[in-house]
Length: 317
Image: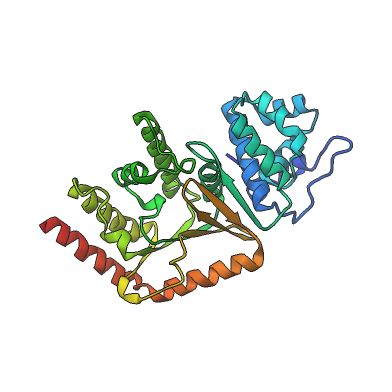
């Protein structure tokens, strides 16, 4: 788990400022970029999976423990040339994973739009999941499907079977691949129960609510609606944008706005790939779109009433 500066006791903060000769110290008020945070999370998770302490890594790298902490918290950039070293130390031999780390390191200081694509579980999915677990607030818009964090397991499986997030033109070819993707989606949902769960606001198109995940299994549709009702009580703010609202700014596609302590980032999901946007002007444009969708959608109370009516009609059927 990455521990942020504000969570470190004063004594630990003092230690973290003690660097080896030639290493810069972490200044007060230093702000990690979103891209550095994500790469830091990846490195921290890999180190823990390898059962290595910060001190052990520091010894191998010829750095201080403070330097490793700063890299994992995103306060200090990781040189792209160091990625092969960390990958070897942590036992990472997946070429695509190493390439992802390298790309994040190279782009750590940049702002703008960057696209990702990849294998069965593409970098877009993994990188988004990392960002999702780090953000303070998540605002998401979905027109044709229930947002991933709000899906039941059965709904997730139906979505994956219909059109999985894989390389363009491909679908999972084996049952094991489908199960793996479902498992990863389920692990993502664990953040809903964590102490650091982000605030979640979802605007969902009515077609997503009314479309059964599997017409052969009406029960799965009822369970999904009930799941939304349950989540809406404590864990998420949910609004439905009804079809009688007319044309709207969400017709161009789904997107999510992830808010961090010092900046926002947008994720646009595509078929088998996705793109991140953190350029301030473009992020503000998406924020304005989202506010428009919120204003056009049913209120939270009216949304709950619609969901109850939908559930009752499905129960009668």
